[in-house]
Length: 138
Image (cartoon, rainbow, N blue to C red; front, side, top):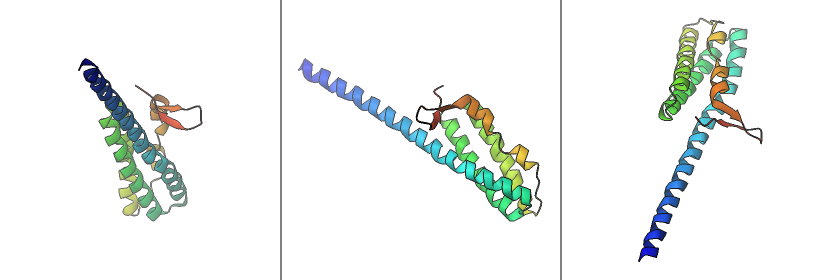
């Protein structure tokens, strides 16, 4: 009977460990999905700002606002308040640029306001041996 209890306990511990590992991987994938969309939207926004394309700026800035809002939710869920705050600032700046562009104003200062990604990456991103990036363990 004791062997069965030990076996059940070991199976339970293994199940918990596998569940936690799976959740960690899901979290990494969720963040990766968000971040891989930011760069093309940011690049497009820069080009649209430079060319004065208000419709393009509105579209790109609105997309960035949604992506940074999603990143903020992710970082809040992961108990990373500093990263969540930075994501919130980026979402707000993108929202301001989108609203201005929808009103017909292309504010080139949005280029400086949006795109402060480096500060967060320096603290929370690590480069893996295979060249990919992942969230640093805190």
